[in-house]
Image 1: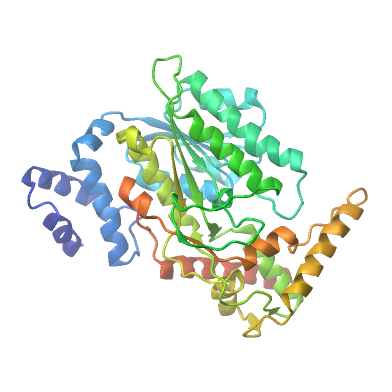
Image 2: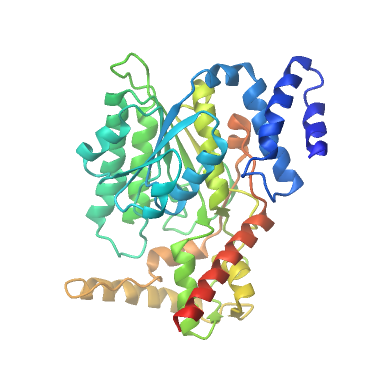
Length: 426
């Protein structure tokens, strides 16, 4: 670890007064569970983050506020649980994390400094007491459904009314900082299939929302951004921002598990349906959690910069089609993707998607029919949509915490564990 200390010392040679801060934090960093078994590049990122916290005057001012209480809505979900783990490892001023969720993960009961709160985000009476006394609220709770498995009214109640409830509770209870987990789908791909190539937050794009999920996320994000600067009864002003992750992947991703299980039914053979030239940006769940942590710290240090902003959330994962990207994890588990080109013409896929939508409508009174392929998911999968995170780098120093190799290996190991469990079940 001595080399790491030398690297960071060189960054501070023009400011000798900061060197003592480096020495003070180095011994703590060396044993930090978040830095174990990481590549040199990632260790430098983590350590420089620690150095900044202990040496920057603005950061020292924030560090005077010890014993912070974080509220994470949806904290038992896929992203939420990873975020709670990241906060426990990386936030030095943490006194408590309140995890608010409709369905509690009982394994988290034993986690140090974690308080589980069961409640319905769409019920304001459940939300208000959870927010009371919180310093930072990270609102990840939401329903993700693009297949028609959840009624549109329920999606709106959770994603839009739930967000409105969180905002109103923050104002009423004086919780000054609110970070919202939005989605790239508030921008696109749109229903016309217009590509978005390496775009940033200022790039013009015709966002057209008809499907309940992207419509709900767009409305919720608008509520959060518009709430920035709202005066609270305690005389302070609410500071808000939104993060827009691309398609998230990683350990415990239910859709990836579903793809795996469906592949088992076809003896691990999968048919290419989308051209390999279509590109999507996917982001590892650990890096999404990392961006949330960084912006939660920066929003307190520099609210005038962060407040009212939305940021794309992506990492160094390769730009690939959904099928080719999923094969990065499925291939080591013995899966094969048939065809270098789509084996079905696009118009046939379009007809199947339309047929699925008609069947879904006809069967609605009798049973749930929600196949993965429908007109909306076909447009999303077949439209290039990639983003850049320059704005997040500029505003709060975001760089991925996990490399692509680490992200890939973690996900493969998890899928192999799933495979082992399936073998035991047999």
